Length: 236
Ligand SMILES: Nc1ncnc2c1ncn2[C@@H]1O[C@H](COP(=O)(O)OP(=O)(O)OP(=O)(O)O)[C@@H](O)[C@H]1O
Ligand SMILES: [Mg+2]
Image 1: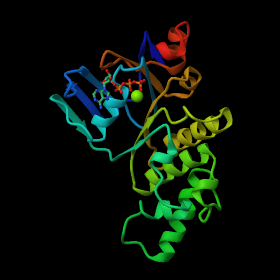
Image 2: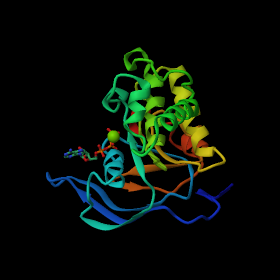
Image 3: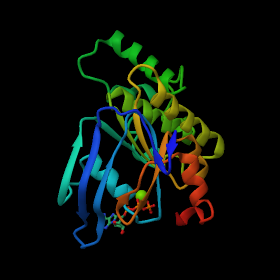
Image 4: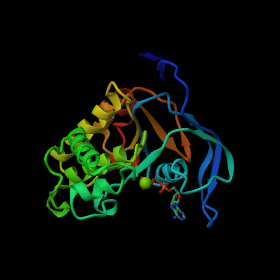
């Protein structure tokens, strides 16, 4: 699969493409500097990088929350952002009601019920439509947030350290669900996953290092883990 350090992926129409993007905060701090990269296609793409290397800023730009000062972005995928803390993104009291506000407005009650059942099954939360949110584990809340992204028909998941606050079992479940969604036969999703947990890199379809506001080349996740493992986890 690899040729030198470069990951070879079947060429598809590129759906997310950054060309020479620059972004500075009002303080003058340059967060992205001549950043160019493309997402090769659907799949699970992981990013690692030191604190302050620009990863979260990159997500805010992809999702349109921030506008770069220079450069060109092509993106024809609808995106959803997901953060470390699921309590920051779940709004309503039960699993079903939280999904409801993400669904298209024109569905009948029967269609809504069917869709909520399907969505919960996709993220391995079958039968939990009426469960109060506060009774869910952190991992279940993250998977409910994934179902919310599916309900709103997002094709691009921007996952900013989604397992940072989870125990190993919940971490595994969230990773398994995202991999499943990125590899399903019908409409596989594209996910960009920021991580400081190097063991997660082994599950990626490709991984890149972010340094000084630039995304490096996509290489295999295992290869990237091996090359940065000698460094301290929060120092990559
Ligand atoms: N709201 C803000 N206002 C001003 N500067 C900011 C703001 N958010 C981030 N920065 C700066 O932009 C740079 C990139 O920050 P960013 O949060 O994108 O890094 P990161 O790679 O996500 O780091 P971490 O691994 O700690 O989450 C840093 O120098 C940071 O201090
Ligand atoms: Mg960050």
